[in-house]
Length: 181
Image (cartoon, rainbow, N blue to C red):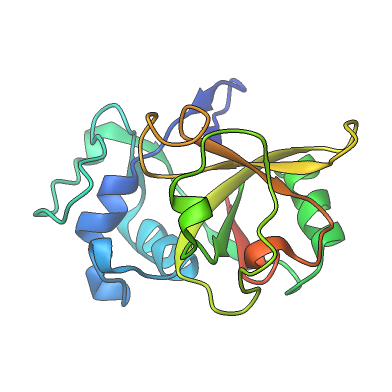
């Protein structure tokens, strides 16, 4: 997601990155790094909107169309590793932040609702990229609001609430970055 020039939210295409960022060292559905995706977007002069290039949950040929660009970037910022305060400041001032997490536990894969607090997930063995879009510190159990890429039938309409300030829950603040737009 990206706030456009008129402050409307533009949903950007995950599938565009899956299909097209391989030459930057990513591996489609096999994984990759957010910084490499940002490098692709910068070199490519944009990323398509999600509505023009919808998520398919599989590798496919690159079908990027410059006419459907939803955002561009001039670079990216890596947030201080393992610093949840810095992550929260970035979310609050910049907007959505790309984060890598440990999503290997069945409790994550079958998450439905509530604040996710998995004591056995790793803060360093990260295997899944998601988008931290907000956080809530006004409840008895503070949490990050995180958008997953597995569709709206997973979690809370595609989102998960992950524990905030709980020892870097599943590595949420280990590998966080955002694009400069």
